[in-house]
Length: 586
Image (cartoon, rainbow, N blue to C red):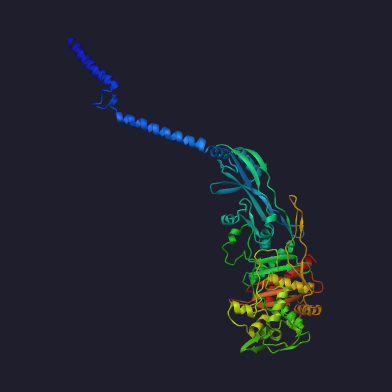
């Protein structure tokens, strides 16, 4: 027991001594008397304590300064941003106006479609589905929920498909570079491209709607605070006959495919008014899915009716004939002897009949020369009247200039002469150039729409402006707009000369002429074939015609690019179109 008590006493003495030492140091620290060792209880350095207080003070100072900037300096701006995060003003696309044909049938229309998109998957849903998803907070137009995001689109429907692509056009979103060039463009509504969609875009284009949407912190819909409904565009009524348009395209495609060129153009017009009844170009594209055509090397977006420049070949002999008759240097009884070919300046110019069959037409006058498309006759005619006379008549009838049809990017074509050749090529004009011009070869270039315009003039005696839209309905207080036929030229040649050319064209589609597919037609027509040579491949096949011959109501021109002979390739296209017309519309 003594041993235990002694041990306890020793421990008490030890702790008592330590306690005394601690009390002494604490007392000194309070009095500032510990400068000799610089430590406080627990072994902490005073310098570290001072550093901690300093850093804490600086951090607090930064927070106070930032708070001042946010609440005072940029307070108004931040309040605006906060409100905008809570309330969103969003635009939604308006429906485009409809496009109708001349019989009131829809050619183009719009519908609103809804899609549910999640990750890379997308499926179409109903408007009711979209509303229920948004109400449940699972997906919406303005937020992405657990089921994905609802996409609202205005889809354009084209009832003729690729058959109407070049005359109607298509729509697509405004590109960034377009917006940069024109700040007035809307990135909400789709923009018209090509055809009527392009030319009349400002009428077809609706006004986007707007919604003021209140959202929660996660960006999900809470409520619609206000709605300004979208306004659809104005409806456009075209001169196109939908049924004829499909027949024209289908026939063109069939024969251009058979000719292996797969390229061509057809345009059908009312020769008395200038109304375009059908207009097609091949190859074409699906206006509802243009992505597939973008990389096509055959240029499906290229409208060959108004943009393609081709030598006209023998269809130009109509102009040369009128030029010669109006000059007074030749008349209906002027005869030239077809010997198969003529030589000028060491160069031989031959007739197609002699080249293909080794035969000649002998002595031949104007009417039969047109019907037979006799090259030798028109070579000699060109020698007689000269390049200036031919050019003046060509320009008077509309060659070398735009027809002003309401389609974008129309080409001018080209009527060459001495001045043009010297300036453009740096060479002099030769007599051989005149002979080539007289039969629509050499440097001469034209578009199918120009050829059809002149065919319509021969048919009616009136040079009219071709057009595609007859009416635009009213809307939003705007009045209805009507487009009337416009005659741009009358009495351009004498009635006698006009009748003589008509007689020659009637003979071309009768036995002994060049328009063989029409020899046994149940209706009478007046026509002209053309086979235009051009470097780089086969000849271009032309055929232009109007009917009925005695009282024309329809004129059409067909071109099959690199198709060969006009009578064999393009004339059958015209025959199918006219057969349908007289069976269904006459």
